[in-house]
Amino acid sequence: MLTIAHKAYLIFSVDGSLYGVEAESVVEIFSLPELTPVPEAPPDIIGVVNLRGDILPVMDLNLRFGYRQLEYCLTDSVIVVEWQKLRVGMIVNQVHEVYNISPEDMTKELFYDREVLDRDRPFVCGIAKVAADIVMLLNIENLLCYSKSVEPLVGDKNKSNLELETVKYTKERIFCPHATAEDRAIFRERSHNLMRSTEKEDLTGLIPLAVIGLSGEYFGLDLKLVREFTDIRKVTPVPCCPPHIVGNMNLRGEIVTLVDVRSLLNMPMLGAETTAKIMVVCVDDLVAGVTVDEVFDVMYLHPGQISPVPAAVHSINDEYLRGTAPYGEKMMSLLDLPKMFNKGGMIVNEEV
Image (cartoon, rainbow, N blue to C red; front, top):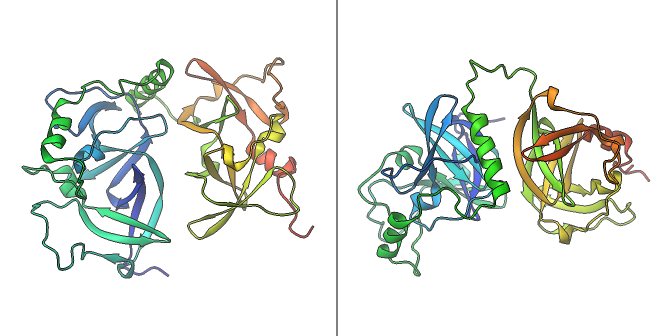
């Protein structure tokens, strides 16, 4: 049973490092849209987005920490946080989960007997153990309130302060300048979707979808079934199982079985070594990891946009499809994941 001393933190990753913010400060999360740069904004404010009629500034955490700017991609997300009515979006690579952290798993003694850095507003207010991971807990107030100088969280021997300042003040004021035309169209569509006012548009009945890639095809599935997306780590093969059972993976202490659904779609199955990501899904009482090539988007789809599966759909088994729908300039097939698991023979009887 949780005690009052526990605090809930939203855990996310940026450039390979894990961070956490108090869950009560998080307003909402959405996929990274196209941002409009503002020339006179602080260097770490990459741009703004029209969020249902309100102008939301969006921060690059790497630049806020004093690191170099990274390339953005479609799988990045924006976490909107609020402190005393000040709202800012933070670009993150992956959102993991909300985790209750106890004081026993947290320390604020970051520097021990060494000289403390001369920083009047430290970004890190503690370091916590979350399962087998180390998470840096961020101080939202200090992140959103600007001090006279910004020091890196961790010293970088390869970058002088002058180099860091040069990067921050001479970076291109163009959002995602190296994005492909297709990616830029998706960024722009996300921005237009966020612009729509909830007062003018009835969102009732819209279907939340996760958009993934399998063998070069786009697929959408009910977002309510998806618990998280994560990278594939060490996979342990399971003997005497059918080919679609890829193996087991330890996910923060939980053993998750990985499956490849391509066989049900008449697609060639791929081994774990050729895929990089999984989506952890919950179908009824079953938790499993589905191997995917890419995670493209999270979106809302109007039921009126769903069309029957065309007869000419190339080689895909339409028995496990709910239909097709437009995705940008492409078409995606909508997976019936519960039917795949309950009637497609994806579940292995442990007694056999």
